[in-house]
Image: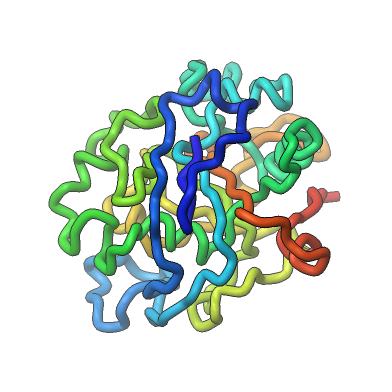
Length: 287
């Protein structure tokens, strides 16, 4: 279930073993990469207003483990006992489909409960920089597999081949680190609050004092090729709850966002208290 950066596979994640579509192999990877998109890239290739420039070098200084797959419905159910996707549009109830329709608040609660259940107690969402490093898998082009996107059909569920729905995790080919669905299928929550100028920073997590907008990465089954690039950024919107009949709106699901899921990470070593306070977030309520 886990791929390790420097370099071993996680053997203690027994909670996920039963429902994981496969198992991870050890991966040995460096920690420095080019974050973002070159400023010379034409708008026709990246879309307008996606805010993933300028490209600059970032070093991932804390080795970490990352889920080989997006968190599945079976995994979500084993921790939360709920089915946010049930009876929703585009619902695909299946143990190995990604858990979707989940809010950032709900994912935070999932991680808190998972940490209570596990021996490690250190799971969290990845930062934007950690996510992109894992997605790129040593590549520098628009996608993890090549610079021109000719093989997108083989690695991603996106608007051109998804038939308007998300699919089981792990069906398409993995990237160079053995990670599945980093491009497309469901977009993935990360820790960071969305900042249009985020790529001007050094990859430090932006403060999480506000719930909207939060960053999602990877694009989804609904998106065009430019929005499933390694560097492409999306962000949450209150409109994702537009059809929620409750007042106030639910904290626990996005009625209009079947395209949103997540994967989780954990550090390879026990972090300091300061690191935990920075990276292990608490749920943020809307009201």
